[in-house]
Image 1 (cartoon, rainbow, N blue to C red):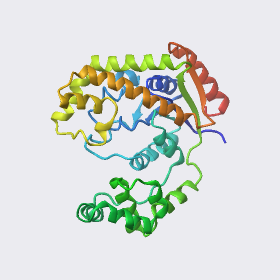
Image 2: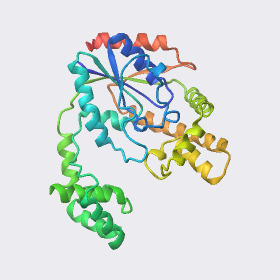
Image 3: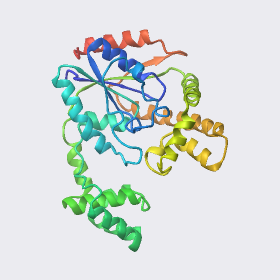
Image 4: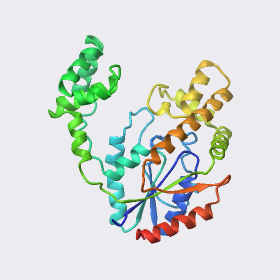
Length: 314
């Protein structure tokens, strides 16, 4: 099938945003961010959120759509991003889904329908109260009876997901596992042309990651983390589990030098990059462009342009 959306993906610090912007400028496109942490307002430096200058006049979507204290999810991302992609297509422009959160990309391409999400209503509050008063094992036993398939893949101590699965079952009368099977059986909403970026040799990627962390520290990442903590953002919330924020927040709260936190950020970023590579390499349709020691964007732009024209996307 002829693709109708472009995906630019790959591990952290591989130039995804710069390539997406260049391609958007060339092909009348708009960027839809697929980064699970760039959704949060006030978290700019540590998430490598593109500045106005880096956006190059190209519209960017799915950035700054949630407050740091909110519990964001892939379901919410898809619900917000699908209408945006549809609108870009309806206006005759090219949606460019760019980012390193593979889960978000895959579910957006699928247009995955999620089980109804009742939200923070009385049902969830009741389940949370029961977990506290009766103990999580009671809820786990109930889930095992109602939805043994979901229970089998969850850890018995995973309170958040156990409550979520029970919430779906009690609200809809249908197990979460059945909702998921029905959703996976549907055809994908979009047909992607996928360009994946990385470095040919791992040491070049590690060096690039280390330089990026140093640049983040120079730009004021410590101050950004301190500002979030001072504003009352809990270090335990989802947003503060992001690499860069979790490590610096821990160093600050422990009274350790932030330089120690920065070194841990580099380590965690390298580990995350390995997981991202594993994820994206599962996609057989991805066209990989591998940088040498340095990223030469003219080469990547020529490679991508040829793919786009040959595919019929433009």
